[in-house]
Length: 64
Image 1 (cartoon, helix red, strand yellow):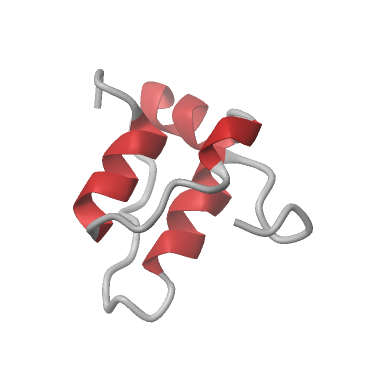
Image 2 (image 1 turned 90 degrees about the horizontal axis):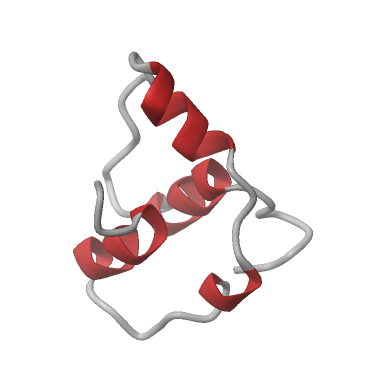
């Protein structure tokens, strides 16, 4: 994921979902909002090729 476009986990989700037909739901819980606002770890910028569901799981982590 390009550094200039993606700096948070939420932006990473949105980047992965571009042109997929899917979108994120609104962040209704404080825990979900906190996840989306966390900085995207550099190690997760180059995770492919993966299925979309697997890539989203990598970004979210096992808890989600």
